Length: 590
Image (cartoon, rainbow, N blue to C red; front, top):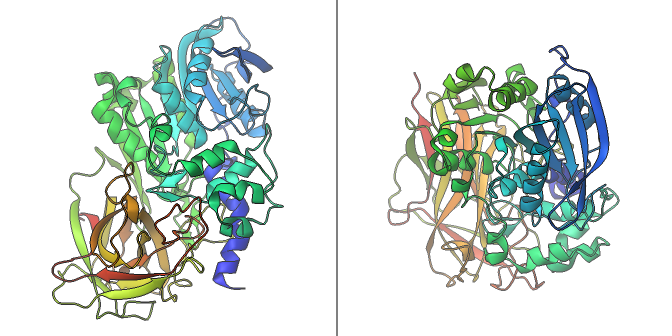
Protein backbone atom coordinates (compact mmCIF):
# COMPACT_ATOMS: atom_id res chain seq x y z
CA UNK A 1 0.00 0.00 0.00
CA UNK A 2 1.34 3.48 -0.85
CA UNK A 3 2.02 6.09 1.82
CA UNK A 4 -0.87 8.19 0.52
CA UNK A 5 -3.23 5.23 0.65
CA UNK A 6 -2.09 4.32 4.14
CA UNK A 7 -2.72 7.72 5.63
CA UNK A 8 -6.05 8.09 3.84
CA UNK A 9 -7.24 4.73 5.17
CA UNK A 10 -6.43 5.53 8.78
CA UNK A 11 -7.16 9.23 9.05
CA UNK A 12 -10.94 9.19 9.40
CA UNK A 13 -11.68 8.20 12.97
CA UNK A 14 -8.40 9.67 14.21
CA UNK A 15 -9.32 13.11 12.97
CA UNK A 16 -12.60 12.98 14.83
CA UNK A 17 -10.86 12.18 18.08
CA UNK A 18 -8.31 14.91 17.52
CA UNK A 19 -10.52 17.81 16.54
CA UNK A 20 -13.68 17.20 18.48
CA UNK A 21 -11.91 16.65 21.79
CA UNK A 22 -13.64 13.30 22.34
CA UNK A 23 -10.51 11.93 23.98
CA UNK A 24 -9.61 15.01 25.96
CA UNK A 25 -10.46 13.10 29.15
CA UNK A 26 -9.33 9.48 29.00
CA UNK A 27 -7.95 6.97 31.47
CA UNK A 28 -4.81 8.96 32.32
CA UNK A 29 -6.96 11.90 33.32
CA UNK A 30 -9.57 10.19 35.43
CA UNK A 31 -9.85 11.76 38.89
CA UNK A 32 -7.22 10.55 41.30
CA UNK A 33 -8.42 8.23 44.06
CA UNK A 34 -5.63 9.04 46.50
CA UNK A 35 -7.50 11.75 48.43
CA UNK A 36 -10.02 10.31 50.88
CA UNK A 37 -13.62 11.27 50.26
CA UNK A 38 -14.84 14.11 52.44
CA UNK A 39 -18.52 13.77 51.50
CA UNK A 40 -21.03 11.29 50.26
CA UNK A 41 -22.40 12.22 46.84
CA UNK A 42 -25.90 13.21 45.77
CA UNK A 43 -26.60 12.83 42.03
CA UNK A 44 -29.29 14.55 39.99
CA UNK A 45 -29.63 13.70 36.31
CA UNK A 46 -31.27 15.61 33.46
CA UNK A 47 -31.89 18.77 35.47
CA UNK A 48 -33.51 21.34 33.19
CA UNK A 49 -31.70 24.70 33.13
CA UNK A 50 -33.60 27.59 31.48
CA UNK A 51 -31.89 29.83 28.95
CA UNK A 52 -32.91 33.42 28.28
CA UNK A 53 -34.92 32.41 25.18
CA UNK A 54 -36.84 29.69 27.05
CA UNK A 55 -34.78 26.78 25.70
CA UNK A 56 -34.10 24.13 28.34
CA UNK A 57 -30.61 22.68 28.51
CA UNK A 58 -29.96 19.42 30.33
CA UNK A 59 -27.42 19.13 33.13
CA UNK A 60 -26.24 16.34 35.41
CA UNK A 61 -25.30 17.51 38.90
CA UNK A 62 -23.00 15.81 41.40
CA UNK A 63 -22.86 17.50 44.80
CA UNK A 64 -21.96 16.76 48.39
CA UNK A 65 -24.84 15.07 50.20
CA UNK A 66 -24.68 17.51 53.08
CA UNK A 67 -26.04 20.82 54.26
CA UNK A 68 -24.17 23.95 53.30
CA UNK A 69 -23.07 25.82 50.22
CA UNK A 70 -20.30 24.62 47.94
CA UNK A 71 -18.37 26.06 44.98
CA UNK A 72 -19.37 24.91 41.51
CA UNK A 73 -17.24 23.42 38.73
CA UNK A 74 -19.06 23.58 35.38
CA UNK A 75 -18.25 21.63 32.23
CA UNK A 76 -20.26 22.15 29.04
CA UNK A 77 -19.85 19.85 26.05
CA UNK A 78 -21.53 18.70 22.83
CA UNK A 79 -20.22 15.14 23.34
CA UNK A 80 -22.62 13.64 25.93
CA UNK A 81 -22.60 14.69 29.57
CA UNK A 82 -23.75 11.24 30.70
CA UNK A 83 -20.62 9.18 30.05
CA UNK A 84 -18.76 6.89 32.45
CA UNK A 85 -15.72 9.18 32.58
CA UNK A 86 -17.95 12.16 33.42
CA UNK A 87 -19.71 10.14 36.10
CA UNK A 88 -16.39 9.26 37.76
CA UNK A 89 -15.14 12.83 37.51
CA UNK A 90 -18.35 14.23 38.97
CA UNK A 91 -18.24 11.85 41.92
CA UNK A 92 -14.60 12.69 42.61
CA UNK A 93 -15.25 16.43 42.64
CA UNK A 94 -18.32 16.09 44.83
CA UNK A 95 -16.42 13.91 47.31
CA UNK A 96 -13.93 16.77 47.68
CA UNK A 97 -16.55 19.40 48.41
CA UNK A 98 -17.49 20.72 44.98
CA UNK A 99 -20.72 20.77 43.01
CA UNK A 100 -19.79 19.36 39.62
CA UNK A 101 -22.19 20.21 36.78
CA UNK A 102 -21.89 18.77 33.31
CA UNK A 103 -24.24 20.08 30.63
CA UNK A 104 -25.11 19.11 27.07
CA UNK A 105 -24.74 22.06 24.71
CA UNK A 106 -27.84 23.39 22.98
CA UNK A 107 -29.21 20.88 20.48
CA UNK A 108 -27.02 18.02 21.67
CA UNK A 109 -28.06 14.87 23.52
CA UNK A 110 -30.63 15.75 26.23
CA UNK A 111 -30.71 19.50 25.62
CA UNK A 112 -33.37 21.27 23.60
CA UNK A 113 -32.73 23.47 20.61
CA UNK A 114 -30.68 23.27 17.43
CA UNK A 115 -26.90 22.87 17.50
CA UNK A 116 -24.99 25.46 15.49
CA UNK A 117 -21.32 25.41 16.52
CA UNK A 118 -20.22 28.32 18.71
CA UNK A 119 -23.19 30.56 17.97
CA UNK A 120 -25.08 30.08 21.27
CA UNK A 121 -22.22 29.16 23.59
CA UNK A 122 -21.62 32.66 24.93
CA UNK A 123 -25.16 33.33 26.10
CA UNK A 124 -25.85 29.74 27.12
CA UNK A 125 -22.64 29.55 29.14
CA UNK A 126 -23.40 32.87 30.83
CA UNK A 127 -26.94 31.81 31.72
CA UNK A 128 -25.77 28.46 33.10
CA UNK A 129 -23.04 30.05 35.24
CA UNK A 130 -25.47 32.53 36.74
CA UNK A 131 -28.12 29.83 37.27
CA UNK A 132 -25.59 27.65 39.10
CA UNK A 133 -24.51 30.54 41.31
CA UNK A 134 -28.10 31.19 42.37
CA UNK A 135 -28.91 27.67 43.60
CA UNK A 136 -29.39 26.95 47.29
CA UNK A 137 -26.38 24.58 47.39
CA UNK A 138 -24.03 27.04 45.67
CA UNK A 139 -21.48 29.28 47.38
CA UNK A 140 -21.83 31.69 44.46
CA UNK A 141 -18.36 30.89 43.11
CA UNK A 142 -18.29 29.10 39.75
CA UNK A 143 -15.26 27.72 37.96
CA UNK A 144 -15.32 26.25 34.47
CA UNK A 145 -13.32 23.38 33.01
CA UNK A 146 -13.11 21.70 29.63
CA UNK A 147 -10.95 20.85 26.66
CA UNK A 148 -11.13 21.53 22.92
CA UNK A 149 -14.71 22.65 22.13
CA UNK A 150 -15.30 22.67 25.89
CA UNK A 151 -12.54 25.26 26.23
CA UNK A 152 -13.80 27.29 23.28
CA UNK A 153 -17.24 27.63 24.83
CA UNK A 154 -15.66 28.65 28.17
CA UNK A 155 -14.04 31.62 26.48
CA UNK A 156 -17.19 32.60 24.61
CA UNK A 157 -19.06 32.63 27.93
CA UNK A 158 -16.26 34.44 29.78
CA UNK A 159 -16.25 37.40 27.39
CA UNK A 160 -19.94 37.88 28.23
CA UNK A 161 -18.66 38.74 31.75
CA UNK A 162 -20.85 36.57 34.01
CA UNK A 163 -20.67 38.06 37.51
CA UNK A 164 -20.12 34.75 39.30
CA UNK A 165 -17.42 33.27 37.08
CA UNK A 166 -14.41 32.98 39.40
CA UNK A 167 -11.83 30.98 37.43
CA UNK A 168 -11.26 28.78 34.37
CA UNK A 169 -9.18 25.75 33.41
CA UNK A 170 -8.92 25.96 29.64
CA UNK A 171 -7.33 22.92 27.98
CA UNK A 172 -6.30 22.55 24.33
CA UNK A 173 -8.40 25.57 23.42
CA UNK A 174 -8.67 26.55 19.76
CA UNK A 175 -7.87 30.19 19.05
CA UNK A 176 -10.19 32.44 17.07
CA UNK A 177 -11.65 31.00 13.87
CA UNK A 178 -9.43 31.50 10.82
CA UNK A 179 -6.25 31.06 12.90
CA UNK A 180 -6.76 27.32 13.34
CA UNK A 181 -10.20 25.80 12.87
CA UNK A 182 -12.11 25.64 10.68
CA UNK A 183 -9.60 27.71 8.67
CA UNK A 184 -5.89 27.88 9.47
CA UNK A 185 -4.45 31.00 7.90
CA UNK A 186 -6.97 30.67 5.10
CA UNK A 187 -6.68 26.92 4.46
CA UNK A 188 -9.68 24.79 5.43
CA UNK A 189 -9.02 22.03 7.98
CA UNK A 190 -10.53 18.92 6.42
CA UNK A 191 -10.90 17.28 9.81
CA UNK A 192 -13.92 19.52 10.23
CA UNK A 193 -15.68 17.33 7.67
CA UNK A 194 -15.38 14.41 10.09
CA UNK A 195 -16.60 16.62 12.90
CA UNK A 196 -19.57 17.83 10.87
CA UNK A 197 -20.64 14.22 10.37
CA UNK A 198 -20.14 13.41 14.05
CA UNK A 199 -22.33 16.20 15.42
CA UNK A 200 -25.01 16.15 12.70
CA UNK A 201 -27.77 15.18 15.10
CA UNK A 202 -28.62 15.24 18.79
CA UNK A 203 -26.32 12.25 19.41
CA UNK A 204 -22.92 11.44 17.92
CA UNK A 205 -23.25 10.00 14.43
CA UNK A 206 -21.39 7.08 12.87
CA UNK A 207 -18.29 8.09 10.94
CA UNK A 208 -16.46 4.79 10.53
CA UNK A 209 -18.79 3.62 7.77
CA UNK A 210 -18.04 6.72 5.65
CA UNK A 211 -15.37 6.45 2.95
CA UNK A 212 -13.53 9.51 4.22
CA UNK A 213 -10.71 9.47 1.63
CA UNK A 214 -13.34 9.74 -1.08
CA UNK A 215 -15.16 12.46 0.83
CA UNK A 216 -11.96 14.46 1.34
CA UNK A 217 -11.18 14.43 -2.37
CA UNK A 218 -14.65 15.52 -3.42
CA UNK A 219 -15.03 18.92 -5.04
CA UNK A 220 -16.49 21.37 -4.49
CA UNK A 221 -15.91 21.34 -0.75
CA UNK A 222 -19.11 23.25 -0.05
CA UNK A 223 -21.34 20.26 -0.81
CA UNK A 224 -19.15 17.57 0.70
CA UNK A 225 -21.80 17.12 3.39
CA UNK A 226 -24.16 15.57 0.87
CA UNK A 227 -21.45 13.21 -0.38
CA UNK A 228 -21.29 12.00 3.23
CA UNK A 229 -25.08 11.58 3.28
CA UNK A 230 -25.73 14.71 5.36
CA UNK A 231 -27.12 18.18 4.93
CA UNK A 232 -25.46 20.69 7.21
CA UNK A 233 -26.43 24.32 6.80
CA UNK A 234 -23.75 25.55 9.18
CA UNK A 235 -21.02 23.61 7.35
CA UNK A 236 -22.06 25.21 4.11
CA UNK A 237 -22.00 28.60 5.80
CA UNK A 238 -18.44 27.89 6.93
CA UNK A 239 -17.45 27.10 3.35
CA UNK A 240 -19.20 30.23 2.04
CA UNK A 241 -17.49 32.51 4.58
CA UNK A 242 -13.95 31.83 3.42
CA UNK A 243 -12.56 35.18 4.55
CA UNK A 244 -12.36 36.63 8.05
CA UNK A 245 -15.64 38.54 7.78
CA UNK A 246 -18.32 39.57 10.27
CA UNK A 247 -19.59 35.98 10.41
CA UNK A 248 -16.32 34.91 12.07
CA UNK A 249 -15.73 38.09 14.03
CA UNK A 250 -18.96 37.49 15.95
CA UNK A 251 -17.53 34.13 17.05
CA UNK A 252 -14.13 35.48 18.06
CA UNK A 253 -13.02 35.98 21.64
CA UNK A 254 -9.33 36.86 21.52
CA UNK A 255 -10.04 40.53 20.88
CA UNK A 256 -12.07 40.69 24.12
CA UNK A 257 -9.60 39.69 26.85
CA UNK A 258 -10.30 42.97 28.65
CA UNK A 259 -13.76 41.63 29.51
CA UNK A 260 -12.32 38.62 31.37
CA UNK A 261 -11.38 39.24 35.00
CA UNK A 262 -10.54 35.78 36.33
CA UNK A 263 -7.46 33.60 36.85
CA UNK A 264 -7.00 31.04 34.07
CA UNK A 265 -4.93 27.87 33.87
CA UNK A 266 -4.03 27.32 30.20
CA UNK A 267 -3.08 23.72 29.25
CA UNK A 268 -1.86 22.44 25.90
CA UNK A 269 0.76 20.24 24.23
CA UNK A 270 3.51 20.81 21.70
CA UNK A 271 1.75 18.39 19.36
CA UNK A 272 -1.77 19.66 20.03
CA UNK A 273 -3.33 20.64 16.71
CA UNK A 274 -5.10 23.49 18.54
CA UNK A 275 -1.91 24.49 20.36
CA UNK A 276 -1.94 28.13 19.25
CA UNK A 277 -4.84 28.94 21.57
CA UNK A 278 -3.13 28.25 24.89
CA UNK A 279 0.03 30.42 24.62
CA UNK A 280 -1.86 33.18 22.82
CA UNK A 281 -4.55 33.29 25.51
CA UNK A 282 -1.91 33.26 28.26
CA UNK A 283 0.04 36.21 26.87
CA UNK A 284 -3.13 38.03 25.86
CA UNK A 285 -4.64 37.79 29.33
CA UNK A 286 -1.42 38.95 31.00
CA UNK A 287 -1.43 42.01 28.78
CA UNK A 288 -5.14 42.79 28.54
CA UNK A 289 -7.20 41.07 31.25
CA UNK A 290 -9.71 43.36 32.91
CA UNK A 291 -8.08 43.51 36.34
CA UNK A 292 -4.55 43.48 37.81
CA UNK A 293 -5.42 40.40 39.85
CA UNK A 294 -6.48 38.49 36.76
CA UNK A 295 -3.37 39.57 34.85
CA UNK A 296 -1.17 38.37 37.72
CA UNK A 297 -2.81 34.96 38.01
CA UNK A 298 -2.47 33.42 34.58
CA UNK A 299 -0.62 30.10 34.34
CA UNK A 300 0.58 28.11 31.32
CA UNK A 301 1.28 24.36 31.25
CA UNK A 302 2.62 22.74 28.06
CA UNK A 303 3.59 19.09 27.81
CA UNK A 304 4.92 16.77 25.12
CA UNK A 305 1.31 15.94 24.37
CA UNK A 306 -1.11 15.62 21.48
CA UNK A 307 -4.65 17.04 21.57
CA UNK A 308 -5.54 14.21 23.97
CA UNK A 309 -3.26 15.84 26.50
CA UNK A 310 -1.53 13.91 29.28
CA UNK A 311 -2.61 10.51 27.95
CA UNK A 312 0.62 9.09 26.51
CA UNK A 313 4.38 9.43 26.85
CA UNK A 314 4.99 8.15 23.33
CA UNK A 315 4.15 9.97 20.10
CA UNK A 316 4.85 8.10 16.90
CA UNK A 317 8.13 6.29 17.58
CA UNK A 318 9.39 8.91 20.04
CA UNK A 319 9.20 8.07 23.74
CA UNK A 320 9.41 11.14 25.97
CA UNK A 321 9.78 9.10 29.14
CA UNK A 322 7.59 8.51 32.21
CA UNK A 323 7.94 12.11 33.38
CA UNK A 324 5.87 13.24 30.40
CA UNK A 325 2.68 12.14 32.19
CA UNK A 326 1.69 14.03 35.32
CA UNK A 327 -1.07 13.84 37.94
CA UNK A 328 -3.39 16.21 36.11
CA UNK A 329 -6.18 15.75 38.62
CA UNK A 330 -3.92 17.04 41.38
CA UNK A 331 -3.31 20.08 39.18
CA UNK A 332 -7.05 20.62 38.81
CA UNK A 333 -7.80 20.35 42.53
CA UNK A 334 -4.92 22.65 43.53
CA UNK A 335 -6.22 25.27 41.13
CA UNK A 336 -9.86 25.09 42.17
CA UNK A 337 -9.01 24.81 45.87
CA UNK A 338 -7.27 28.16 45.61
CA UNK A 339 -9.66 30.10 43.42
CA UNK A 340 -12.96 28.59 44.56
CA UNK A 341 -12.18 27.79 48.22
CA UNK A 342 -9.38 30.29 48.99
CA UNK A 343 -7.27 27.34 50.15
CA UNK A 344 -3.44 27.09 49.86
CA UNK A 345 -3.23 30.03 47.46
CA UNK A 346 0.06 31.42 48.76
CA UNK A 347 2.18 28.54 47.48
CA UNK A 348 0.33 28.23 44.18
CA UNK A 349 0.59 31.94 43.43
CA UNK A 350 4.28 32.05 44.35
CA UNK A 351 5.22 29.43 41.78
CA UNK A 352 6.58 30.21 38.31
CA UNK A 353 3.72 31.05 35.93
CA UNK A 354 4.98 28.80 33.10
CA UNK A 355 5.82 25.12 33.17
CA UNK A 356 7.03 23.45 29.98
CA UNK A 357 8.33 20.05 28.96
CA UNK A 358 11.58 20.32 27.00
CA UNK A 359 11.55 17.56 24.39
CA UNK A 360 14.85 15.89 23.56
CA UNK A 361 16.05 16.59 27.07
CA UNK A 362 12.73 15.13 28.25
CA UNK A 363 12.31 17.05 31.46
CA UNK A 364 9.97 19.65 32.93
CA UNK A 365 11.19 23.19 33.52
CA UNK A 366 9.69 26.26 35.16
CA UNK A 367 9.85 29.63 33.43
CA UNK A 368 8.84 33.13 34.44
CA UNK A 369 7.46 34.35 31.12
CA UNK A 370 6.37 33.32 27.65
CA UNK A 371 8.01 33.71 25.20
CA UNK A 372 11.37 33.39 26.97
CA UNK A 373 13.21 36.69 27.06
CA UNK A 374 16.58 34.96 27.02
CA UNK A 375 15.84 33.19 23.73
CA UNK A 376 17.74 34.62 20.77
CA UNK A 377 15.81 34.60 17.50
CA UNK A 378 18.33 32.95 15.17
CA UNK A 379 18.06 32.73 11.39
CA UNK A 380 18.80 29.44 9.67
CA UNK A 381 18.98 30.08 5.93
CA UNK A 382 17.97 27.87 3.00
CA UNK A 383 20.77 26.98 0.56
CA UNK A 384 21.07 24.85 -2.58
CA UNK A 385 22.38 24.79 -6.11
CA UNK A 386 18.84 24.59 -7.40
CA UNK A 387 18.24 20.89 -6.74
CA UNK A 388 16.81 20.72 -3.22
CA UNK A 389 13.95 18.44 -4.35
CA UNK A 390 13.60 15.22 -2.34
CA UNK A 391 15.64 13.77 0.47
CA UNK A 392 18.57 13.17 -1.90
CA UNK A 393 18.69 16.77 -3.15
CA UNK A 394 21.40 19.34 -2.47
CA UNK A 395 19.43 21.52 -0.04
CA UNK A 396 21.26 22.63 3.09
CA UNK A 397 20.44 24.77 6.12
CA UNK A 398 22.90 26.97 7.99
CA UNK A 399 23.36 30.25 9.85
CA UNK A 400 25.34 31.61 6.88
CA UNK A 401 23.54 34.18 4.77
CA UNK A 402 23.08 33.20 1.13
CA UNK A 403 24.94 34.99 -1.65
CA UNK A 404 24.44 34.15 -5.33
CA UNK A 405 22.44 30.94 -5.41
CA UNK A 406 20.02 29.55 -8.00
CA UNK A 407 16.37 29.14 -7.05
CA UNK A 408 14.61 25.85 -6.45
CA UNK A 409 11.59 24.75 -8.47
CA UNK A 410 8.85 22.16 -8.21
CA UNK A 411 5.39 21.45 -9.60
CA UNK A 412 2.48 21.44 -7.21
CA UNK A 413 -0.46 19.54 -8.71
CA UNK A 414 -3.70 19.48 -6.67
CA UNK A 415 -4.68 16.29 -8.53
CA UNK A 416 -1.88 14.62 -6.53
CA UNK A 417 -1.40 16.86 -3.48
CA UNK A 418 1.63 16.56 -1.22
CA UNK A 419 0.59 14.33 1.72
CA UNK A 420 0.54 15.20 5.39
CA UNK A 421 1.97 12.14 7.06
CA UNK A 422 0.94 10.71 10.41
CA UNK A 423 1.17 7.39 12.18
CA UNK A 424 -1.93 5.19 11.58
CA UNK A 425 -3.64 4.27 14.83
CA UNK A 426 -2.08 7.19 16.68
CA UNK A 427 -5.37 8.98 17.49
CA UNK A 428 -3.72 12.24 16.45
CA UNK A 429 -3.26 14.04 13.15
CA UNK A 430 0.37 15.06 13.17
CA UNK A 431 2.73 13.90 15.85
CA UNK A 432 6.41 12.99 15.85
CA UNK A 433 6.30 10.72 12.80
CA UNK A 434 9.30 9.99 10.60
CA UNK A 435 8.91 12.25 7.58
CA UNK A 436 11.24 10.35 5.24
CA UNK A 437 8.47 8.36 3.50
CA UNK A 438 7.15 11.54 1.90
CA UNK A 439 10.46 13.38 1.52
CA UNK A 440 11.12 11.33 -1.61
CA UNK A 441 8.47 13.31 -3.48
CA UNK A 442 9.79 15.86 -6.00
CA UNK A 443 7.20 18.42 -4.82
CA UNK A 444 9.01 18.73 -1.45
CA UNK A 445 12.16 20.79 -1.01
CA UNK A 446 14.43 19.47 1.73
CA UNK A 447 17.04 21.65 3.50
CA UNK A 448 19.20 19.95 6.15
CA UNK A 449 21.93 21.31 8.41
CA UNK A 450 25.23 19.64 9.17
CA UNK A 451 25.33 17.42 12.24
CA UNK A 452 25.32 19.64 15.32
CA UNK A 453 28.60 20.02 17.21
CA UNK A 454 26.64 20.79 20.37
CA UNK A 455 23.01 20.63 21.42
CA UNK A 456 20.70 23.47 20.35
CA UNK A 457 17.57 24.26 22.36
CA UNK A 458 14.69 25.81 20.43
CA UNK A 459 11.95 27.07 22.76
CA UNK A 460 9.32 29.58 21.70
CA UNK A 461 7.46 30.78 18.61
CA UNK A 462 8.73 29.63 15.19
CA UNK A 463 8.38 31.64 12.00
CA UNK A 464 9.35 30.99 8.39
CA UNK A 465 10.31 33.85 6.07
CA UNK A 466 9.88 32.53 2.56
CA UNK A 467 10.58 34.32 -0.70
CA UNK A 468 8.66 32.55 -3.43
CA UNK A 469 6.84 32.92 -6.73
CA UNK A 470 4.10 30.90 -8.40
CA UNK A 471 2.69 30.59 -11.89
CA UNK A 472 -0.76 30.57 -10.29
CA UNK A 473 -2.92 33.48 -9.05
CA UNK A 474 -3.24 31.69 -5.69
CA UNK A 475 -1.45 28.79 -4.04
CA UNK A 476 -0.31 27.50 -0.64
CA UNK A 477 3.05 27.39 1.09
CA UNK A 478 3.76 24.83 3.79
CA UNK A 479 6.87 24.76 5.99
CA UNK A 480 7.88 21.97 8.36
CA UNK A 481 10.57 21.90 11.09
CA UNK A 482 12.22 18.49 11.60
CA UNK A 483 14.70 17.00 14.07
CA UNK A 484 16.87 14.50 12.16
CA UNK A 485 18.27 11.80 14.43
CA UNK A 486 21.66 10.18 13.81
CA UNK A 487 19.94 7.09 12.38
CA UNK A 488 18.09 9.29 9.88
CA UNK A 489 14.72 9.32 11.64
CA UNK A 490 13.14 12.65 10.64
CA UNK A 491 10.99 13.66 13.61
CA UNK A 492 8.34 16.23 12.81
CA UNK A 493 8.53 19.07 15.34
CA UNK A 494 6.09 21.62 13.95
CA UNK A 495 4.64 22.93 10.70
CA UNK A 496 2.60 25.82 9.32
CA UNK A 497 0.71 26.96 6.25
CA UNK A 498 -0.22 30.21 4.54
CA UNK A 499 -2.75 30.53 1.73
CA UNK A 500 -1.08 33.02 -0.56
CA UNK A 501 -4.11 35.23 -1.13
CA UNK A 502 -4.18 35.90 2.64
CA UNK A 503 -0.52 36.93 2.90
CA UNK A 504 -1.49 40.53 3.77
CA UNK A 505 -4.97 40.25 5.25
CA UNK A 506 -7.49 37.59 6.24
CA UNK A 507 -10.26 40.10 5.59
CA UNK A 508 -9.20 41.39 2.17
CA UNK A 509 -7.49 38.60 0.20
CA UNK A 510 -5.49 39.64 -2.83
CA UNK A 511 -4.47 37.49 -5.83
CA UNK A 512 -0.91 36.88 -6.85
CA UNK A 513 0.68 38.25 -9.96
CA UNK A 514 1.97 35.06 -11.58
CA UNK A 515 5.75 34.96 -11.59
CA UNK A 516 6.14 37.79 -9.09
CA UNK A 517 8.26 37.18 -5.99
CA UNK A 518 6.53 37.73 -2.65
CA UNK A 519 7.75 37.48 0.92
CA UNK A 520 5.61 35.20 3.05
CA UNK A 521 5.56 34.82 6.82
CA UNK A 522 4.47 31.33 7.85
CA UNK A 523 3.43 30.99 11.49
CA UNK A 524 4.68 27.60 12.70
CA UNK A 525 3.34 28.06 16.25
CA UNK A 526 5.54 27.04 19.21
CA UNK A 527 7.79 24.29 20.46
CA UNK A 528 10.40 23.39 23.04
CA UNK A 529 12.88 20.89 21.63
CA UNK A 530 16.52 20.19 22.36
CA UNK A 531 18.20 19.27 19.08
CA UNK A 532 20.87 17.01 20.53
CA UNK A 533 24.53 16.92 19.56
CA UNK A 534 24.90 14.82 16.42
CA UNK A 535 21.33 15.56 15.28
CA UNK A 536 20.49 17.78 12.31
CA UNK A 537 17.92 20.55 11.84
CA UNK A 538 15.79 20.24 8.72
CA UNK A 539 13.19 22.40 6.99
CA UNK A 540 10.82 21.03 4.34
CA UNK A 541 8.94 23.30 1.94
CA UNK A 542 5.88 22.21 -0.03
CA UNK A 543 2.54 23.55 -1.26
CA UNK A 544 0.10 21.14 0.36
CA UNK A 545 -0.45 19.10 3.51
CA UNK A 546 -3.36 16.92 2.44
CA UNK A 547 -5.68 15.89 4.06
CA UNK A 548 -4.85 18.01 7.11
CA UNK A 549 -5.63 21.01 4.90
CA UNK A 550 -7.80 21.26 1.82
CA UNK A 551 -6.06 21.59 -1.51
CA UNK A 552 -5.44 24.97 -3.04
CA UNK A 553 -6.79 24.53 -6.57
CA UNK A 554 -4.39 27.21 -7.89
CA UNK A 555 -7.04 29.02 -9.95
CA UNK A 556 -7.60 32.09 -7.78
CA UNK A 557 -11.28 31.20 -7.60
CA UNK A 558 -13.00 29.92 -4.47
CA UNK A 559 -11.30 26.75 -3.27
CA UNK A 560 -14.52 25.90 -1.45
CA UNK A 561 -17.11 26.45 -4.17
CA UNK A 562 -15.36 25.33 -7.40
CA UNK A 563 -13.86 22.11 -8.74
CA UNK A 564 -11.61 23.45 -11.47
CA UNK A 565 -7.93 22.95 -10.70
CA UNK A 566 -4.55 23.40 -12.35
CA UNK A 567 -0.92 22.62 -11.63
CA UNK A 568 1.34 25.43 -10.45
CA UNK A 569 5.04 25.93 -11.13
CA UNK A 570 6.59 26.98 -7.83
CA UNK A 571 9.86 28.84 -7.27
CA UNK A 572 11.61 29.25 -3.91
CA UNK A 573 14.39 31.82 -3.76
CA UNK A 574 17.36 31.95 -1.39
CA UNK A 575 19.89 34.53 -2.53
CA UNK A 576 21.30 37.71 -1.03
CA UNK A 577 18.21 39.72 -1.98
CA UNK A 578 15.74 36.97 -1.04
CA UNK A 579 17.14 35.30 2.07
CA UNK A 580 14.55 32.62 2.81
CA UNK A 581 15.02 31.44 6.37
CA UNK A 582 13.46 29.89 9.42
CA UNK A 583 13.54 31.96 12.61
CA UNK A 584 14.23 29.77 15.62
CA UNK A 585 14.18 30.99 19.25
CA UNK A 586 17.47 29.53 20.47
CA UNK A 587 17.92 29.35 24.24
CA UNK A 588 21.50 29.53 25.57
CA UNK A 589 22.54 26.33 27.33
CA UNK A 590 24.60 26.16 30.53
